[in-house]
Length: 106
Image (tube, rainbow, N blue to C red; front, side):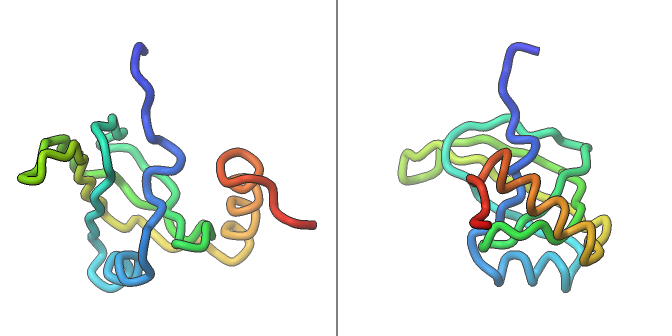
């Protein structure tokens, strides 16, 4: 396709509260800067603010708009599918550090 997506890092939460709300209510929402294309309907890994893989979520909506301050923003709504096990989290976190966040210290 001719457009980039935010597939793998779409759900990196900025605050622990955003992530905890997702776990508590089973649904969550985040706002990203700029116009972005998100994989609505697909499952992705959710990362905590400290870049730890923690859950699988399904993207339920993606709305790109210009807000009242004139900034381009994209709102993403998601549903919790399930939390990752400790082993799944460890493996996915290591892969994400290598691929997206920079290598972990050894």
